[in-house]
Image: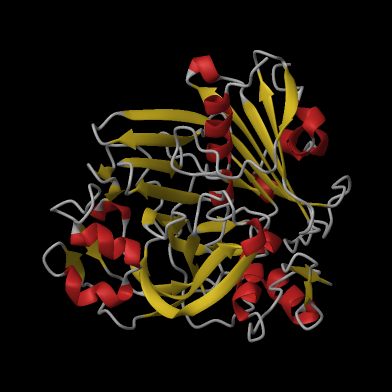
Length: 447
């Protein structure tokens, strides 16, 4: 039977982005970096209280990625609303978890890069924490990419049926189409959270898994996907889908990395910005920049489109204050030997220098024309026994396809205010490794 490709791809795209944030108040500043609950607040470059609008944005363009400038400049169909307002607040630093920092100190000096026969690179002797605490030449850009890949994310992040995440697509006529579903993200290797084994028994060489099942609309209910990423970076990611009509799971081609079919993201845009087989890519550091970002937004964007500044779908002022973040501007391209037929000519990701999460990206087509731009908002959540973290497994994502006048928004629940459940907070049933991390577990979806 022919696979319903659009349905499969839509499920795959959403699986990477659903999470539900909790608003976390800033704690007192000035504590040591090892104290994971501490916060340091600073301002630099733009005075706190500044409001950036459609009238004065050019004064602050040096703090904007190219894609954000394009939205303000108004040269595309997607453009900033006339009433856009971005209030700037202090930059808030949530120190990385003590366990993750300890692993960085213990293992950071032993992690190495290794050249592959096809011209790519991979990581060897990595054991946890930041692989390359002080990235430098040679291969500085690729070391930053490795830091992004192995950035801190909690061991277990769960949505429940009371807490459905959403993904909505929007066309130029204002037509929106949404799905909602359950989401389980699990890290099975290199864990540093308190009380969590470094390697989860039964993990079988896996680094992480993402399990997702559609709950709404009814006609797509029970469609489920499982994505498996391996600790060995040279082993391609695996994707499985459960189709209710067939009542069985089947694998999808690992080579179909550009499939989108209705959404503005691809499998390579997953895992909160970039989920490709990274040894297949070159990474070049363009430079270091301060850019505007918005992260501590609570549940302000829980309702689409009511809580969004339409027709663009930009965060309303009620979402909270923006802050200046120090970032690496990283250019990522497919290896020349593997670039034929690949959808993106290059990807520019702005990676936060403190927690290595992605805050923005500009995607270019094979002719190097700006194609898509994305605002990425990793949400501050208080991780149990760790403290507030930016890279928490919760994120709002806004993708605008500038060429095709299409957009995709994804993130938290439908406005009821429930929180994402992390580690010990997750119900016991989500500890079932067989059900949520193996292809065989997909067969239990309708039982």
